[in-house]
Image 1 (cartoon, helix red, strand yellow):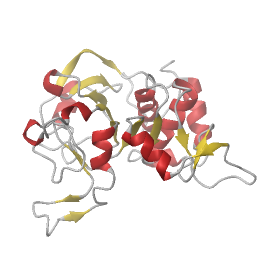
Image 2 (image 1 turned 90 degrees about the horizontal axis):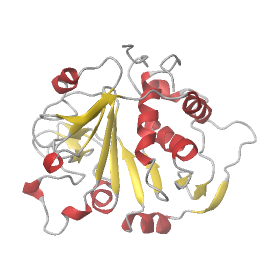
Image 3 (image 1 turned 45 degrees about the horizontal axis):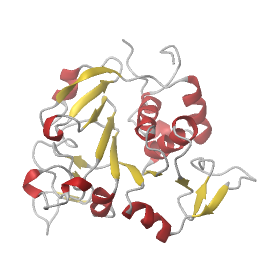
Length: 265
């Protein structure tokens, strides 16, 4: 890999996100959103050939489905049916790793996609609802993709609604802690995980030109530095070739506001 390659911040994030599946073996990889979906496709083709992907509808696929309008003559390369029943078999048996885009995350890894405000009956902002977050968070591994790192997302207190179970001891259900498996958080500033003492959030790598203090200033709770904190590796030429082939309409340009290039050290 070389820093001399021309790539965007979104492409750096997508490559970093793809690596969350690198050592997973044969699990169902689910990416929710443009960046996560491209990351799952890149992971399947470059980092973990054992990953299972779907076309988002009904089939397992051998080759990730490109984003956006399909060119004339394109056909999904299906290798079998992936019905809801089979998806839930993967979910309930822990054979899935999802990369999702929460609206809020707190220091315990609890995530919110439902609503914002202090009053459940009269929310300030109505969002998607909890959807599959509760069940997913106690059945299989989850990682987060956050294109805008700031205190509105990484909140100082608890998230307004706990949709996704985290490591909050005050909300721990006896016997359920063993099912919580939060892996990574990829943002436009850094890559973090929950590998600190008592699952403390720690910064594993900083994107080029970003300081730890800058990340801390944009976060509503205290962060720790990983003992081996480093600069996030850039995407290689093959990473970029794959991502651009999977996204022929450049939808990734909308992942990060203004589609900037990473800062150069």
